[in-house]
Length: 257
Image (cartoon, rainbow, N blue to C red; front, top):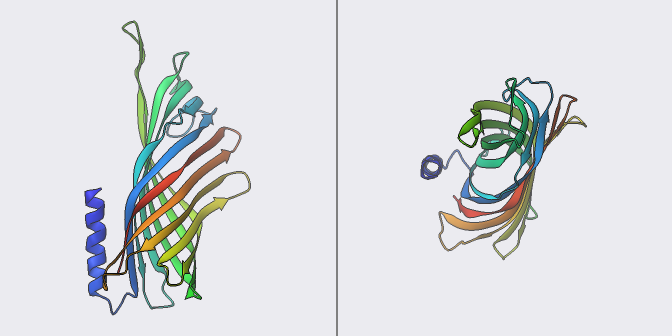
């Protein structure tokens, strides 16, 4: 977390120094209290997990770190940029077989550690016009997943040795953001959607929040944000069935330059 905030602070400092080139810089970080739910089932044995069976989430909540940086410049032809970082964790049970090795009847404990990096080039459709902002762009979501299926023993006898894997996936999503600021209140309401779907397979990442800006500092304006975030992945391609959801409240600190 310290390294992330330091990196964002360096970028923000450089951006402020180049104020002739950048119109606005915003950054934030906080904690997302998310609860996973759902399952992932595979019957073909292909892919990173090489699973013939089913993973089911234990639906245990956890507090995860997020951070973001927004840079808006005055050159209309070039897109603005938004960078995001978030971690996810999920624990549950896998039943079936992995790499041709049958799992014990009760299944094996399984955990997922997911790191997401979002690179979002976007354009302003409205830029604080009548206190309303609308952004439209493309989210390039880089997903790094570490999977660990734990060993299973019974009465000192190892029934399954365990399995680990790492995978990186890049998913393009449509990005839409809307913000409305309430005049003379320092309060803003904001929502953004990142989504892609072909009618059968769907992925979306939706947030809605309210923030309050403390404007007693002229150059750097701190703010507080509180919101709700939902990530959903649905896959149905015959061999693979996935219905995973991560949702919960988040809160953090913002800085505006």
